[in-house]
Image (cartoon, rainbow, N blue to C red; front, side, top):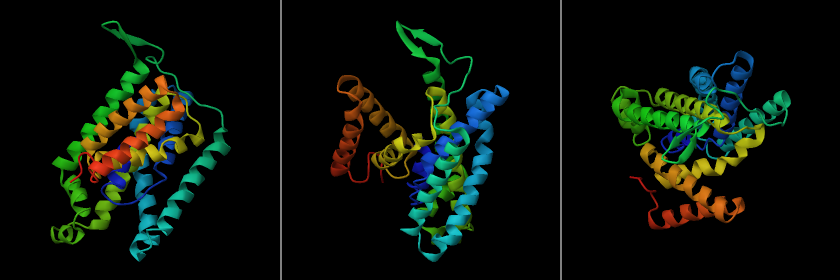
Length: 267
């Protein structure tokens, strides 16, 4: 879930607080394809990534033309994304209501036994797909021209122009990739558990916390920070109650930033 924010916020420095709304929108896209055509939800998420990439391109172009180009992205741009978040959430609520929605697949409800430990396929399959998505994004940023350009635009846009690349075009590509990653993560999410339009509020803080803890723009750091906060929340929820889990996670974030302000893998 945090990969898109790691790209958009960590590298582009755009506080896209509407990212969780695109996550839930991806969940509902997978839900519609699953209930209407019987398509596997994760396959539906993969098929919808080009659509969400195009949606991300449109959103960034509006954001750039209305705010970033005028130097008004700090506050007014934040309000823009707030509005976008509520528009998506309210639209989904009006269309599908506030009931929990879930999907069906052959592997949901089944598990595999590994040495006496049962692992549900509805958790294992999204985990493997998420790791594959993380690896793909890591290779894209480190091994391709556009990936390196995305890394460069966050450091020195002027130098990037001297290399023959348009910073606005590169940011547009990065934003589109970030939204596409959110849509696929949404398909993984609804495979794990049912969702409602308001589920996006549960992930706003977690996404940004993981991005900052791992190190701004570090894909490997995002993965490590996700595992740390996920395990801590699970343990705290099991032994002390769910109300403590999120508080302890953010406590770990504050302690880590006090010791290493750049994050675990920040440079």
